[in-house]
Amino acid sequence: MINQKNIELLAPAGNLEKLKIALNYGADAVYGGTSTFSLRIRSGKEFDIDSYAEGIEYAHARGKKVYCTINSFPFNSQLKLYEKHISKMVELKPDALIISSPGVVKMASKLAPNIPLHLSTQANVMNAMDAEVYYDLGVERIITAREISLKDCEAIKRAIPDLELEVFVHGSMCFAYSGRCLISTLQTGRVPNRGSCANDCRFPYDIYAHNRESGTTFRLEEDSEVGTYIMNAKDMNMASHIDEIISSGVIDSLKIEGRTKSPYYAGVVTKAYRHAIDDYYAGDFDDSRYQSELATTQNRGFTDAYLTSRPFERNDTQSHDFTIQNGTHQVAGLVSEDGKTWRCKDKTCLNNSVEIVLPIGATLEECRNEYGDIDKVAGKYWLTLKKIISTTGKEFECIHSGDLNDIILPTTLPSYTILRRGIEEALENKK
Image (cartoon, rainbow, N blue to C red):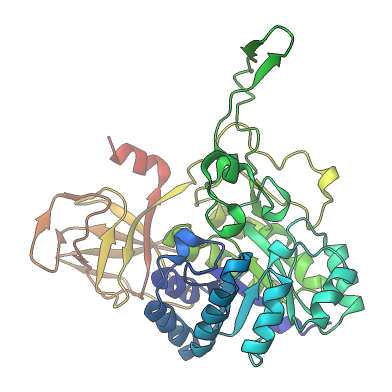
């Protein structure tokens, strides 16, 4: 059994800013990589070698870890390129390499003998027999398939006690088996297992019937309440089961999906799971607290997926009515790293009040001055804006999403503090 106090919270790092946010909001480690041979090409393009190296240094300076994703599947023509890329990543000294292909595992073992190897969920490990094969190849941790059960994790741990196990606890689910999908390839030429999935399963589809004898094709009418998102999986949300997962004693790392998602998602979701873990150890676990925060994010509806229930026992994992829905809140602004300014993410006007969401462990004092007021009401901090003025002296009555002016705060706030408002107020503000 593992030392339960050391269970890890692993968060996505889609770019340097999101890496820093995830760490500030409670992650013990983050995962991500440059676009080369990573399964999130869109996200990876936001990291170049220099910014990725900076991210690793930032994490290490805070006693945190970075796991490097090299988890696509190689063609013969790319083998030398893989060798070159792995060697380049080794120079940056990440804390592990995440790999899918057994051949690349062998390659990395030779090129990076001192860096731990983690097996990607794309390898679809579900049992102790397969786990042992990879363990014998030198893999120290397996990121299990999303379809695995906690009982199967227990069986793997009994068979190979020294093998670390990592499970997904939150984020997007795939319509196919752990990402083994060709729909995007067929429709757009974007290959999921090469890192460029177009998320075709999220689209609405019309259903037709074709009579081969007559050559007749007609559209099948659907009930208005049924919808047409026939392949759209709900998002995984295991926050209510964190106590059960930790109590099992067989899981080493809890993983959040979402490298391409927003900085708000990276901060709020990481913080919710940080609280769930810490509260469990403190004997104060209350899933309603974490669920209320997770509900603030955009989502496709939530499901607790398969870790505690077998797939054939579930009939609520698909969202047939919509591809995405607003959460209960909308991010209004994000505070800079130096804490002196913020940038607008949603229309904000003079005298608006926005909720202040602090990073883990951060504190704040109330204040009042010409720029605004910070008040604590019912355990939450609120910022009321008296003046919207940029560092260049430009003043606004209202500022809109995407504006790149840095707006002066009434006091210095912790790095990457989030400003948000309720979704109904946000929608009303847009009118």
